[in-house]
Image 1 (cartoon, rainbow, N blue to C red):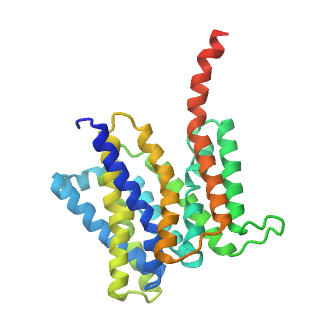
Image 2 (image 1 turned 135 degrees about the horizontal axis):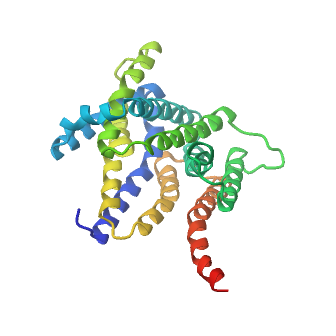
Image 3 (image 1 turned 90 degrees about the vertical axis):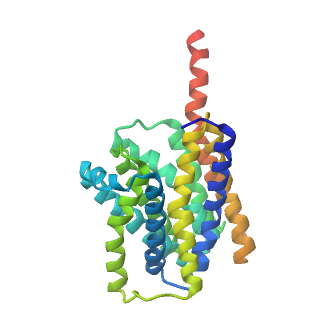
Length: 305
């Protein structure tokens, strides 16, 4: 693929903007349907758009062959994402204000770095510990509404579900470190495997019914711009980029843009504790990202001395 930084940045900005809207779309959709129903119809939309993209690319015929290379990996991936991860995430959004659930979900990258130590044999680095302390202090600030002295969690079950979703998402990425296949094919395989489990849960709960047209529209939006098309757009940005650092830095704009959409379209008054907690989480993510770069810069000066 021809490298073009300007085009890559346009793809990246588009992806971040779309991802910034999905917390609002979650809450609007959940006003019309249950978490399991939202997952079902969003997954169907995502499956269809991924199949369409692969069909246009002439890659649909490779589905079976790629699955047969590592069937157990794809089974694990499909159970984790979309099935368990989004079922838990949507349940968290159903219980929490969007301004709380959204920043809590951003801690998955911190947890991933910690899980990589026992599960991938990576070393525990000082900046990972510092990043975790900052991020999870931010979680406490958000979960307590800023009342740290009382340490009373406003919605403990919702907070627990939001944090559980970060564990499931981290496990999904760890499982996928063993997958060397085409990433879009891998994602479609995950949805094809996860869909029967999602249908089974909806059937068990008696929720196999069409929601309102507003709910279907919301689920379609979530399926396209949270689960499907936007992933392909981001992947294209990364492959087109001459330098990926400016792209990854765009991600830090996402949670703040998301709060703007939450405030504008959901009418939630953003609490000071949300801003403070989110700032701590983002600082934790920055420490995690900048730690290796700072060490690399300091290494030559130390060796010279």
